[in-house]
Image (cartoon, rainbow, N blue to C red; front, top):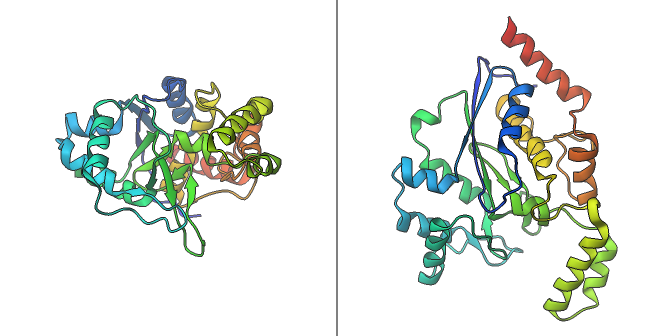
Length: 277
């Protein structure tokens, strides 16, 4: 366990306006109750905040975001030089962040580096963590992986949590994919996928799922643990810090159990004792 000198934590959380079911006041209250001497400030959408408060220029920002797009998930390489139409699309997204758009992938670490560059130095001091909820679908290709994978969270500064990724990245039961492979038409595949999701009901997360608040609590806590302790994920499938690969695992860790494992709870308790001394 790595524990930096701890006095207090200032946590900024940025809303995803395309997902309207997240109860941010409840999220802030939970995190402040879990983490000693933690104050949480809820802000609006990150890129809107960057434009209105930090002077980010929309055209340049749109070009940088478009450059982080990934076309081939196998290679997981960003496009680098975006087309004018892609830049124009991102500019429209900046003006209307509540508009939900699917099917576009972004290299997660490239986007994280870009977002970090927008944050003023005085808000990157130790003891300050930014957590950005975004509808953008994040993909990365980790060392030793043969292909890129969709991600729910990118740890670090800032933390990126993909609300789309929470729904789309975890795997569904294997028999669903077997059914999809029997169909050639993408439209039919989408219809079957939606029907299978309806059948699975509460076993899977869905867009605008009221349980997303509970799930985001756990993922925001993951970001805090990594920042304070250097702990990335937990191997216990019932711990809130478990990096779920399936919907079954995610529902179990974040909703059915919704608690930390004994080891990680002790780590928080040691932080509380340290802050009380």
